[in-house]
Image 1 (cartoon, helix red, strand yellow):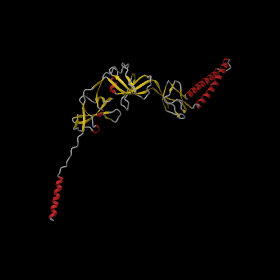
Image 2 (cartoon, rainbow, N blue to C red):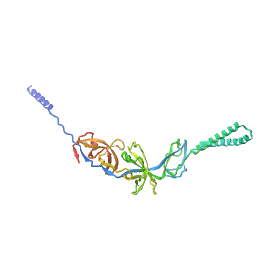
Image 3 (cartoon, helix red, strand yellow):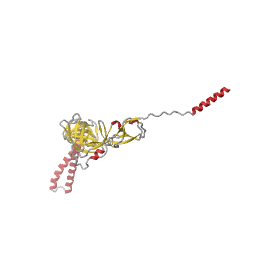
Image 4 (cartoon, helix red, strand yellow):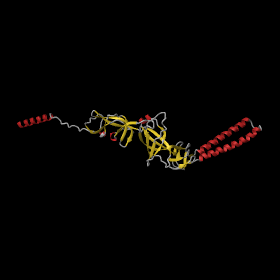
Length: 351
């Protein structure tokens, strides 16, 4: 009995001692990051843009009437002349309509000729002559309409060009306006680049400096060719979040095909846009957003990380030019950005 009492006492003391013990908390390892402090912005007089060659005056061609394709007369890459037939529809119905309309026209024409003689001889009344004259005019209009409808069964090239694509095949049915082929002008070169709103804001809205010609080098060649301004969009592209800008020139002696890459060299001062200032940010510091062209950076402020949106003007080999969202003296985090969270405390810093 005494032994059991002491055993219970020892057990109670052990339990109470265990309840009074403090749990050991191990400190969480701090995140170590690389940082850089932004110096003065760099001024760029010369800018380089990546572009792509686009087909000039790319034109979709379609029939005005419905029907079944009996023949596609061209293939992709074919050079064709203005007026050359491209595709044919089954025209039996339209040919029959024309034959019937032509027969009615021929009959009305003969009746009107006889009526003219009879009217001069006062053998028919003015009302009878007018009725035959109206019948002739109606028959002529119906004949002309039937001719036009028959002509719509043949698709002709509207200008000299090259077939870019063939969208339909023989024996397929087509509806009015349904694209059959696309055609472009091979004698012209169009180059498209994307520009930021910062660059667009530097452009002279009066167009006085549109005479400036930037130089363009095409894939496979270092030679630069002058090009002139063609047009630009005034609304942001929904995917790239940038503005589209086109340049134009005559085709080269060795033709450059649509889809080829191009590099556009712009002297900002000569173009009347002055020098462009921006900060060079390493690619490792860029945090891509969910949308196309959306970027962020992480700044270190009071030993904590904070995320800010930025505007990337240009991607270079050694980083990106950023004009909005950063300022001189900002401390930018350039490593482990995927592990960062808004307001996270940063203890370890590598300069």
